[in-house]
Length: 150
Image 1 (cartoon, rainbow, N blue to C red):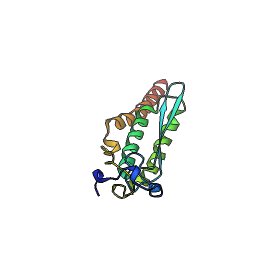
Image 2: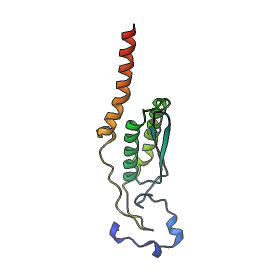
Image 3: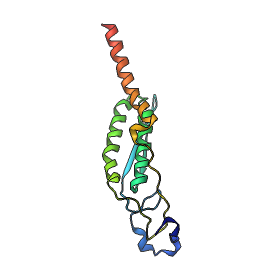
Image 4: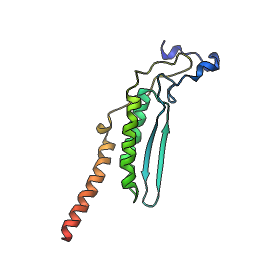
């Protein structure tokens, strides 16, 4: 069955719609997972989340986008310097839940469309590389300032 041969929701009995399908594309299999994000602001901070269930491809796309944004936007507050690495680690552990799923298939019980393209790996994204360079640059700056005071 291809994505274009899907029945409409009105043609499917309600009991069959209870199959766990991806919230983004409707494909199966899907795993219930929540990816987190963090945005540090100078005085405040903002916590972000994207709840599943996600199929493998949509889950990996969401993981990569949320984590890359967190690496860039997460460092800019007092508590954020501690919260950002924790958020990234939580996402890394939850990534396995969707990475180990089988290839997404059209949902036989409801409408679905092609899954999201996962895009480049996390460390191949310029945003993630810049995000990792920020704390390294800050630590080097602190070491330099501390050595000049000695």
